[in-house]
Image (cartoon, rainbow, N blue to C red; front, side):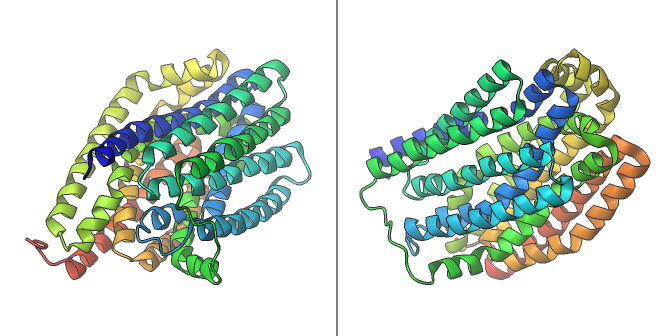
Length: 422
């Protein structure tokens, strides 16, 4: 590795840390700020549209292409191929968003907010294809800078308009405009300025091939996201937008666990792929063990911290009125933190199964879990409210993690000889 490569690797780690932190923290805080400024009802609509429905729409537009894109180190597909495919998936995501909004909420203000925030999330996915290309070309630092700039710019525009007008729809439209500007000025501009060898040409049949490669990943991820959010949908349906706002608020700390785990998971994906290609099972197991222990430690600390100080800190974010309601949800908060730690483990095992090229197995596991998760969330929320939703979330995530872990261990033994290449 040259001095220049080492410099970019260090810079990439730092900017990935900054970008991931900013993205996660801002996405956590926007909902709580909406509750604080606009109240529980409108804040609940925003939280549900942005964090629950919006994340599902993002998944459709994103179509799980990041692992395939950044691991395509041989350049089999050009940037133009990946971008064209992302445009197609984004168009599909928009159609789904409009259909869902109308079917779920009719022609209403809530439906308009869902659609506008879906557009925001779709543009987020479009920006991601540029950031994947930066990372594939060894410039994770530019990826981190891009995430930081567009996230802060869009959030600043959203918050400014919301504070000045108290108009949620106008604030969301402003955020959409801000992310459009960021993509045009920074994402596209940085790619053209920093790289001379980017392939913008599109090859016939590439989108079909990419669809075939990513379909099982997308289907599994889409279902995974539903299972993650099943209790949120149930709470919103049975208990209304205001309780939905409080329930989404106690989910906020899980983002911190996922954020910290992603700091160490994402940068080692390429390295894990190399271990697999080199039949180095010892390094794969050692890396998995170290990451698992780190996630476990963060989760245990998060549960302890949340029991004693979690509600007080969340109350500072959402304001005293909403904070008074959160006092009733301390037990649910700790259960959700445990579920967040389990979800971080699930993310790690998920990527290992991808590296082992068992995408179809991912889909089978998630497909088998979706109906039980749906039924469990409805049953538990209907009978035990918010606490029931938290328990159903933990049970569902734990079951999937256990199943994928078994698949990973079984296939690692089959495909990589014990001891690897040593």
